[in-house]
Amino acid sequence: MLRKGIYIGLMVLSMACKTKQVTIDKPLIKEEIADVFPEQEIAENIKNDLINIPDSSIKSIYYSNHYTPIWKSDTLITNGIQWIRNAKYHGLSPAKYNLSKIEQLYSEIHTDTCINTTKYAQLDILLTSAIRKCGLDIRFSQLDPNQFHSGWNYPKPILSTHDSIWINSIKKNQLNQLNTFFEPKNILYNKLTLELKKLYSQQNIESDFQIIDPGFILQKGDSNKYVLPLKRKLLKFPNDSNISMDFNQELSDAVKNFQLKHGLVPDGIVGKQTYHYLNWNKETYINLIKANLERLRWFSDDQFTTGITINIASQLLDFRDHNKSLLTSKVVVGKYKNQTPVFQSSIDYLVFNPCWTVPRSIATTQILRGAKRDSMYLQKRKMFACINGIEIPTDSIDFSQYTASNFPFTVFQHTSPSNALGKVKFMFKNHYSIYLHDTPQQSLFKKPVRTYSHGCIRVENALELADFTLNKIDHQNIDKNKYLAKGYPVKVYLKKEIPINIVYLTCWIDPKSGEVVYGKDVYLKDYLISKELH
Image 1 (cartoon, rainbow, N blue to C red):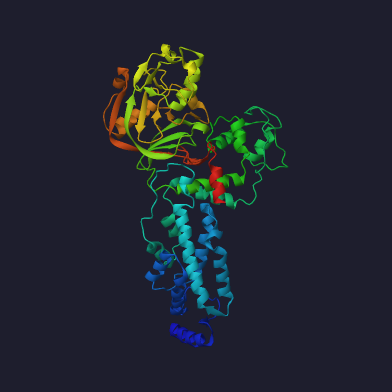
Image 2: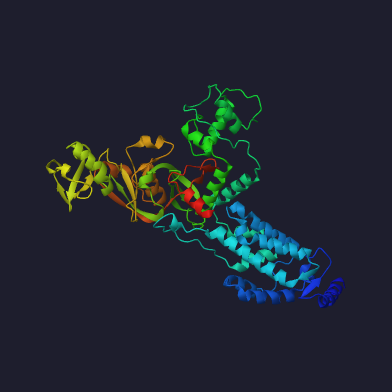
């Protein structure tokens, strides 16, 4: 009887209100709005408004919904508005999604004496459009990866389900399911949104101050004034507290944890690299996370679940199977001027005892300079020069007459312990001539930042990776030592190609702790993304 009485009252009131407005007692929008709200009149307005809206997807959503409103209660609308506000935790700007207009309309509907069906239709369409656009930005990104990485060849991510799925979640007031629907299915992405939320919740960070690098290291046992700002920042001591100048065990442990958090060797010694990160402020971390959230949207959900992933920024290799990490290794990547490119491919064969074909960029610079200084330069390094596949005796070559522009030779290096490629290389198709390989320069792996190559990727435990690849993954039951003993190049094909992903992420997950690590932007790419996002 009560519901019937409400309908009769609404019919009378609708005749008294102009422009299809209906007066009801406040609060104007109740949980029972589907029963008391003039749904048909709103549907007519929605249908008319959609004529001037170019987005065919929004038209399709409302067509499937018979043009009836989707947002039928205060709770739904406020939850929808809050979901858009939370876009900032994905590194997005809520203002981009007409948030102020939506909030204004919602406020006007609450302020009006009558329910204005025209405004309500506008609100419903705006809110649905905002959710969809925001959701698509969360999944598909705002920026084109080709803008930052030439030759980008990763497949575009997809949404495997229809709009009706998330619309039904809204109708059931299960807006938490929107994150499940739109978010990239990536552990790092999820952790970064939580990190960003934590940063935004911090009103004022007392530790957001600059620390002067004294020009010398600080470590446990030291005692001087330069220890005080370290304690204030890392141990959160207030500025006016009476702090000892002693670099004690507590501070040493805090330094080690800080170093782990920033991809450094956790030795507890405060030097140049540690000071660099100590002077990051809240805004630096926020911009770093935003840039990496945007990068992660460029990849499909299953891109890194199986195969080898190499992160250029962290200089780390991770071999995964069904999203489980099986083997990790340090790597050396290209210098800033010889940057390792970002791309995907598949490893199809390995070469033991590789012979090195020296890239022309190296042959015409480093090798040519050395040969001009020392006529025995090539012989000492077990190198030889060829023209059109024919070896030219090096003692017959006058290198002084050649420059980079007229250098006619292809230079090779024989298999040997000093060969630049070490004992094994991993080959995969790409037009950059990039591959993974061993190296005799093992000392480089002790460096905190390992950007020393001309673009190819040197692997610390290359023979272990080869053995693991051939026997554990490819099930070939091969004794690598038999091939190594031959002393000449031996090519071994895989039964099944192994995916390899080369990426650039300045945030990553520590494989041991599972915590987010903030790293160095070795190729200065974060700034470019941050600039575009702003």
